[in-house]
Length: 179
Image (cartoon, rainbow, N blue to C red):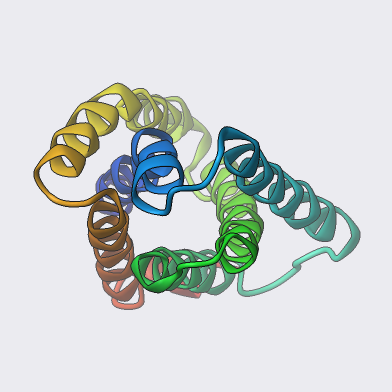
């Protein structure tokens, strides 16, 4: 469980790359307006909302670990697609999909965190998971620096590669078998 949390921390740091690089990608690299940036974020939010609602309507009773890893894998693949997108419609659709799969990843990982550890270890596991989410400022710093050395599109694609690697490693861990 601890090794899975460390890998999850790495993925969390990569996921936040959109927070610092998306605005530059939309406004400077793709030359879209701030209104179109708002459209992309709206699609991301709609995807997150629908991903959460989907899990609320469709109860996943088995293979939660597999759903977690596959949603992480899909999120990484969607991030990797970002550098190849030139239109606002496709970028909005990609971010809708990213929001959808990462809402699923977040919800399922929370369910797993509460269910897997025994009562005596639960507080320690949840503490480590909280530290993982508190690493976001470090992710902002890292991805801001990466985005200043390469294009924002390349930084987002690189983040997708890291997320993808973490997901692929996840297929070799016990978390994949969790029901």
